[in-house]
Image (cartoon, rainbow, N blue to C red; front, side, top):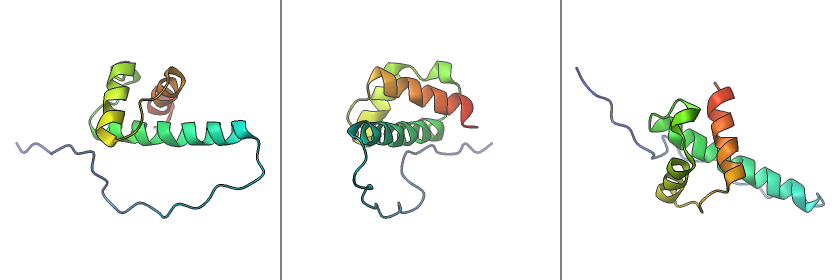
Length: 89
């Protein structure tokens, strides 16, 4: 039986980033960037075989962030990552 290799490398080239819209309240930008970070971390965890929120501890999420070169997420972002894993199916 062959075992598939698990990787955190992207399978395709990422889309070009566009500038965020100007004139929004600061909290909108903070929330937007937090959601983007949570999505990147949730995708990386799913790619490494973490399919249950209970398996995604704050330490594991922060370790994954370190492997991806992302600043360690806050407790709020870690909760968002678990919510994405739970409800994002």
